[in-house]
Length: 327
Ligand SMILES: [Zn+2]
View 1 (tube, rainbow, N blue to C red):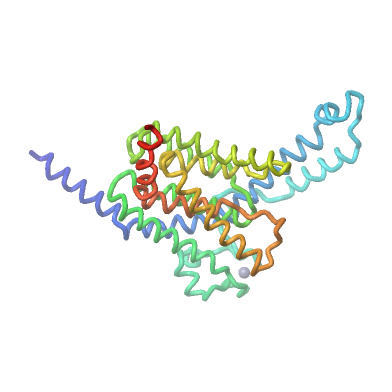
View 2 (cartoon, rainbow, N blue to C red):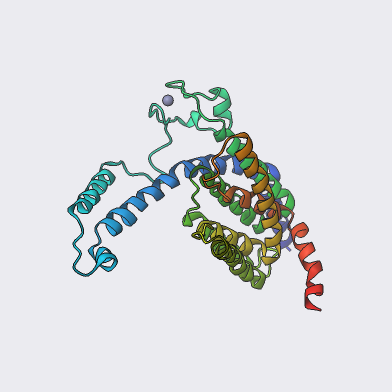
């Protein structure tokens, strides 16, 4: 008899915890963390790239030199010197992780106090300037925090109280980080794309997503494969190296795993449509050089967030066409 009121009370807690306001508050904090991720993850990635791909592998590896230029070829001493210089630079650089050191002003190094680190509010109170050196702080910081809050609240509205809302918020946070890092560096780190694939598959297997696990697995494979195939066709037709980045393939695999293969045509239509309109606009109006690669990740993220929040609209046209394909 005592069980029923306790269950009801627990449900009340759930409703409160997963209310749009509570998730918006969580979104503000996660958005603040995303700013750190977007700022530091590329640096951490580039350091790993210099340390492993360049210093340890390309410059210091005698076997790769000999397999390229002949068994008796001796790598020039400059290569070893360059590897040494890179390693000395790496050792001289202070350690960096997502949690340390504490956030500081990039201009003067002033460590932010807790009161200067409140999402959106601190930026407004400080009028977008560092309290120590008055250097301007980009508008992007509060915008990312506000956007994360709004998207988390929308997840609460769309999915209601339950695990799926948390899965959706996690996906939104990963997609935002990918979009911004790709925008800054044309780079989609594995440490963001692979977790989206895993999140989608695990959520489907655990039954906390609207997607059957078969559709999620097919989504991951088709999402990766369709961009890979497009890249190969492109390369063969134009006789150019494959321009499709592997990061984009993994990102679309993640969206397919999260939302099922049925959403992929819609996401690609949205991303390619927006990408061409904005890309042509940039070339025409902002004199963006045509050779400069335009990142695809931000458009995939936009299509993915739309598909997450209105999955039925993306799925319905595909399911309507299935009987026609079958018969
Ligand atoms: Zn400063």
